Amino acid sequence: MAGKSEETLAARHDRTHGVAGSPPAVRTASRVVAVCCALLACVVPATATHAPELELDKPTLAWMQAALDNWEAICRRHLHVTAQTLPWIIFYDESHAWHLNPEKGLLPPSAAASASLMFAGRTLTLMRVAHERGLWVPGREPLPVSPRAVTMLYADEQKPFSIVPLPSLYRKLAGADQSRALDELFLGLASHELTHTRQLVYAAQRINRLRAQHTLPESIDDNTIQHTFGVNGDYRRLYEEEHKYLLRAVLANDLDACRRSLADALSVREQRKGRFFTGQNSGYSDLDDIFLAMEGLGMWVHYQTARDHAPRGEDWRQTLVSLSERTDAWSQEEGLEMFLLIDRLVPGWQARFLAPDFPSPVVVLREAVRNRAQQDSAVRSHKVQPGT
Image 1: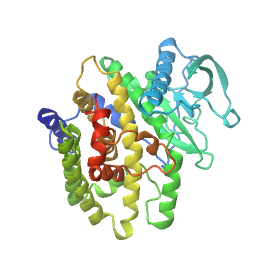
Image 2 (image 1 turned 180 degrees about the vertical axis):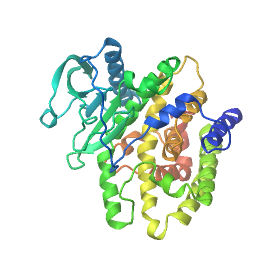
Image 3 (image 1 turned 120 degrees about the vertical axis):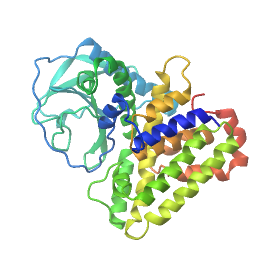
């Protein structure tokens, strides 16, 4: 057991939940933008001021290229999939958006930018669109021009697109001394959101089926359950106990201790679901699993980006602490812990979660606890800790 690391992360958890202290500036800024997968959220048009610059400067273009390079590396090295044709990506600043791989027939008045980007050996052109009533996106009212990375659906929820703010916009969230940290944060957020493009169509279909069978809110996103039930003290207590055991499992030095803590976490989870997700609230049980699968995988990808860009020799626990400080969303913090455990205990798991019928991470973890004898040999040859 890495006692000091668990103490540090537990202290971070206490700060997040209001026990003591205030989180760092970058964490505060990042939570503003770590809004993911708003499936049916209402958006309010906003007016943006037009700036005179029409073309991208070299540092901005280099950051955009780094985001694509990072996503390609994530696909090949971590998700173990061939880099596909990119989804529609909308990079944007205060005055303009640059559309990569758009459906040109759907675009408002636009112009081809002189700059281009590379992905998987292909040259891709950019289409420039000036903001009018806000950030134009396909199939929706314009979005507020604010620094957030989000993935949404269009074409009757059959196709995904991602919006990604550019450095000139998101660097306004903190002082100049934090520019590098913000660059790396949004690099990770870009890949987090692009991971959602691999699952969101299927997730929306599942949620629509749940709506037909259960009573659910009109607007649903990854924080719906936290906002709905988190005000209940008993629910919060069970969630925090479950979270404590999951964290202990992540930090465990040996597989037996890892599985014991994981079994404890799953037991508390069953208590929480059995008490609160029943009757007219029974639909929240599957909804919870859907968002844990999506946010957990997105955060795991973000963690891999953070590890790849961490200072040389930085311990994986410190990387985890730094990333954990940047969110107070329960689906993200618990989902990350679950996928760190899945990656440790279930070799070759990636294909299952990128399939249309992706499983609940809870089901996969239960399998890992039950099938310990068959899996130990494969697990030990795979990896021991998230940072190795």
